[in-house]
Image (tube, rainbow, N blue to C red):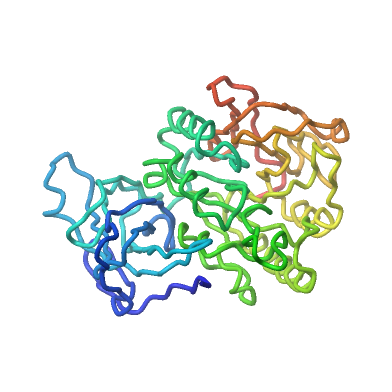
Length: 436
């Protein structure tokens, strides 16, 4: 079943929030299957200062999917002060058989820089109460977590990475995921392992993912099973993401978007059309052109102090002797032109962090340039090569990692940790002279 775009069909305005999701598409509960909410994941409906979105799953269809949201207080009587938000349901077909129901509620009209509690359900069966904090409506310091390539070991060794990251940065405002969340994007069993690994963190810290090549693999019975183009319906069922990508690539929703958060513009790109030989050839040139035009506008019309790009395949790879000159020519030139500060990547199943680079050459700390990082959080590891040694300040192989990034007015501070909590790298990016 192809995931269809969710749309606002009605509105309910209160002093606390505006909610608008179709009640006409609600489905009747089936007997025998569970209506208990699972896989609760935070995302965004609009501005992070005034909105939040939440997705969840039930095995059975439910007649009145909804969320309740309240200002965070210590009293246990949260339901008395909560506002009820109608949600929208989508039936999702699973491989190789079966159906489930994913739901999304948009919480809007929220107060900036405020802690809320919420739960999801159908009015009778509810999840536990979970918390989130809205962004400030002004530039302000914050921290976020960055991970790359969970992909393998989702059920056994990846969970410790997420737990360690959250323990290290319990105040993190979002998780940036550089792709290849799973080994096979169509496989719901792997989605179950991924969501179990995150646990309550997914329902407390919003996720900004980009798809990698594995996230776009098609089901085995497909005639072009290893070709990539669009994510499976499970991607957009699990994540609520901004819908401000290229206007003519609506069928690729959830793969290109940007988000402004407290002085940072996060630009999230699916770079498979530039760096994947398995990309559907008939679509490659069209998608590339659309993405480049959209990216130029997103970079040019950027009022934020900092710009961070998230993509899967790296511009400067450090393993397997892979090389992506087409991507460097198309995207790297834009990163140089518009002074992108940091590019977060995956794909190489190792850790690498470049010096500040401009046009592929090392520049001084106070000159305009970009730092390129790549990391791995799962169990699959690659040996590194020496081909990028002149560009890389640090390369590590064979360990699971996570990164904590601290955003301040005049600098970005990045700390990289092994999954055992040992710090393996630390650096800062200062505002370059002559840039924003």
